[in-house]
Amino acid sequence: MKIHEYQAIQLFKNAGMPTPGGEVVSELAQGLTVANRLGYPVVLKSQVLVGGRGKAGGIKVVKNEIEFKEHFVRIRALKIKGYSVEKIFIVPAIEIKKEFYAAVAIDNIKGDVVLIASAEGGVEIEETAKTNPQAIKKYYMNGQKTIDPTRWPEFIGSVFPDASDQKAATDILQKLITVFFTQDCSLAEINPLVKDAKGNWFAADAKVNFDDNAAFRHPDLEVLRDISYEDSDETEAKNLSLSFVKMDGNVGCIVNGAGLAMATMDTIKLLGGEPANFLDVGGSSNPAKVLNALKIILRNKNVKSILINIFGGITRCDDIANGILQARKELNIQVPMAVRLIGTNEKEAKEILKTVNIVSHPTMRSAVEEAVRLAKKSVG
Ligand code: GDP
Ligand code: MN
Image (cartoon, rainbow, N blue to C red; front, side):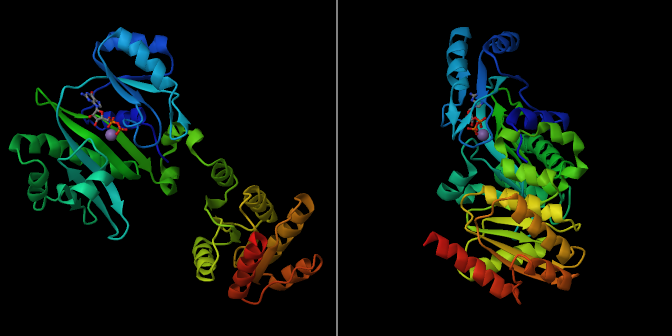
């Protein structure tokens, strides 16, 4: 889950990090009240969950009420990468002396959490990675949740050569690390982390993504969710206890167990096809899950064939077969299917499927082959 800047800033503030303050509004009149209270200049910051707001004209420092009105109205009417600006975050402008970059993220390849920092802040880190990669410094947590005093000085010195900056930066970075771990983030980023003309530090922009798999540990964060940025099929699937991720291909998949679902997608690719989704119906056995899964998958018009691959354990094959029957009755299914069911109650399942002339494939490979072939045939 991604949250808006104003929400992430609040999280940082609660963790004791220095932030410029400010308030989020939707209407001009409210905005003017906030600006008058803060005093000019203020920065108007569009709240959209996509990058490059600045470039799109969604960030503007304004010096007075006239400028405020003009730019508030303009920004509020913007569409940034297809998303309308519903809220504007109004913050006191900082007299920026230097912009840094700081983020805590997951390095999937190393299997570790990494703190990334750079003295080249304010620009997108991907840009710095291309133009000036040596300016990006990385500090691996080595499985720890706090900084290691023996390795730290070298790292902090490489980004902040000034000793007086190192103290302030260390405090902020340690707090950023703490936020990352306590809130189960997948990313906690400050860009820019700024030092102002008086030597004060601020997190001037905040980006926080949470690991959805840990959402159950943070019921308090649910209110931060902005559903206008979430795929409605994924939201519905989640509410129906289905683990579902939409993808770009045309072979719809219904599988039990995350591991088998991944292996099934790999096999589809291996045999020349493209999966339309990841879907795990496992966890409990219930025909309704198959019906719900098919409803969601068939809504995707790219889907040209459906592959049902079940290795029955807790999930009973007869429940799956009954789900398929129910779906065929209730939904007008035009898309061809390839089915492979083995394991618990396999025999019963095959009897059920026989009544609608579906034959279970003997192997996963042959089922995948057929699903890929059917999808290709339909595309022509
Ligand atoms: P982003 O484009 O979505 O990353 O938005 P940011 O919040 O990072 O703002 C983009 C840039 O606007 C920053 O890197 C700063 O250079 C500038 N900016 C943001 N806030 C202020 C401010 O308070 N004062 C000044 N002078 N510039 C600001
Ligand atoms: Mn930024």
